Picture (cartoon, rainbow, N blue to C red):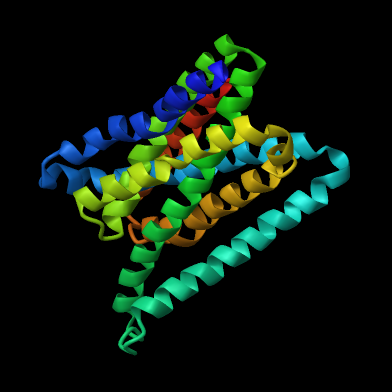
Length: 259
């Protein structure tokens, strides 16, 4: 029971407090936020791809071993197709009145669906973070503390990107903060469930990682990158590439702190 008293506050640190730290972005005046928002989307693209390909998927493949690589790969594929269908359903719900045939309307609702998908994917990712923090504490308290701090540091830049996506999707600042905090609470849920039944949950961990990665890959490739392609100026394109690379680099650096 003593370990649980460590897990709960440190999963809060890794989840909710990192969101609150990232929410400082929302305090910027509206004019500055509008200027920063496109840059935040570029950075978020790199962060999402970095988390997926350099953190989540390597962990998933390591967990299952060579004999089950195909099952994890199949989970990624099914996840991407499922998020495609989920986005279609979100679009259908918004366009049910039959007035979304125009390109502009579809683009507007695609931005809204991106916000919905990022919350789902982030909830899964935070749930996995909770499991990883709990597992570290059950191995060693000092390892748990270090892992929690690294998770929080790694989450802050990603959460800034998430806020950028939610604002771009039409969320108000209050709703973006509320839904991001609710999504971050899955870190605590994952940590507590892991403490109560880690042996049972552990076998499903690679597949939860794969689904979280597939959601982030889908959002980056299907929703964010097409938005970035709307600016074709060479200087804008260079800035986008630099910010995408910065997102990947920062996630890589912070993830390295955990190992």
